[in-house]
Amino acid sequence: MYGFCDNSGKISPVIICPNAVSLTCTEDYNDLELTGEAQAYDNCEIDTIYHVDYVSVNQCHVGYVNRTWYTRDNNNHQTSCTHGYYYN
Image 1 (cartoon, rainbow, N blue to C red):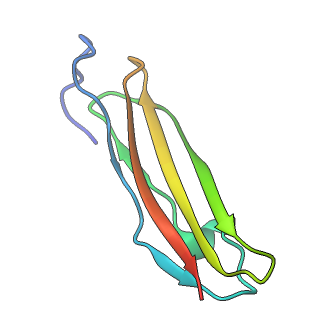
Image 2: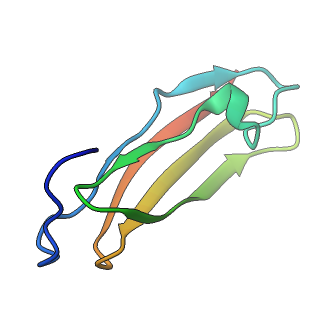
């Protein structure tokens, strides 16, 4: 995001998760081409963006994955969003 950079560090970044998707048993939830990536914006600079998965999928690939994306700006403010993937 372009514009005024508030160096006082009071403004947290904004993060937008991709939409939830359904996956087939042969598709890999780690494939970001299939599942999408979160987009993060800040009035200054994004320091990092990463995700953590909670996986509840059995050996037959039935279940779901909840993915929480985190972003942190260069003033150490963190924001997150969560979305899911479902195996049919």
